[in-house]
Image (cartoon, rainbow, N blue to C red; front, side):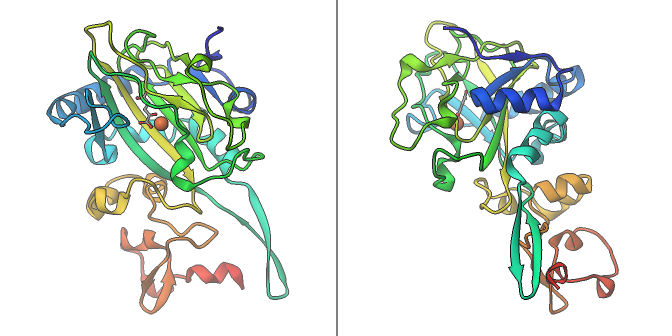
Length: 297
Ligand SMILES: O=C(O)CCC(=O)C(=O)O
Ligand SMILES: [Fe+2]
């Protein structure tokens, strides 16, 4: 079976979108800069070593996972804002909707949230994960007819091979309906060098592979961008202190969920008004701020 489509890191955003539309997933070679890859290794490897292994077959009983990546490494920001990840996510997830508000026809577009951040390290002896879709948590309907809920990236922090558990992906499975059962015979392993990345839609069937014949650890740094009208799967508000969030640029603060966006999800009351929570992180003059409902009128 042919491998997953591979693009180089000078591919265009529309190249990535076209392959995702067709196959539901692809590899971008040399996705991470040398600095980011080295930084992720430096920051995450010692922490992963101290994590407990999973307690079930899905989490992996020989797999170590480390979540809340933005609390552990500033290099997570380069993954979230990589144009070949962020821009296709905007394309698939942030589709505008026209709604009536009184006499007005108003256009709302959901925006993006970072839904999950996780480093995943498969030790020798780890068996295959069950095939699944990452948008399962949203109870999403399939086929999505173009309305996707998640774009996922899995960056190779070590080389991924067919033997050490390189993620199994079923190309084209993003188009299947909810009754179609995924079979292992349809899945192909993600083979890529450290620094490259697998990008796939939340509707694409995949699984962590088997690491049963090597003596090497397979390490990944993964992240999901989710549409803002679903709840973030990982609870970012409990995973990081507001000081930690405030230490990042505003774009990352908003992606972590400290925003109400244009569809008013996630406002917080400030001075008796429904406000964008971004104002809790800065020192803006709150009396001059407009409430989130202002856009509706
Ligand atoms: O580790 C991998 O290759 C994939 C893991 C995965 O898909 C998951 O935990 O949802
Ligand atoms: Fe998954």
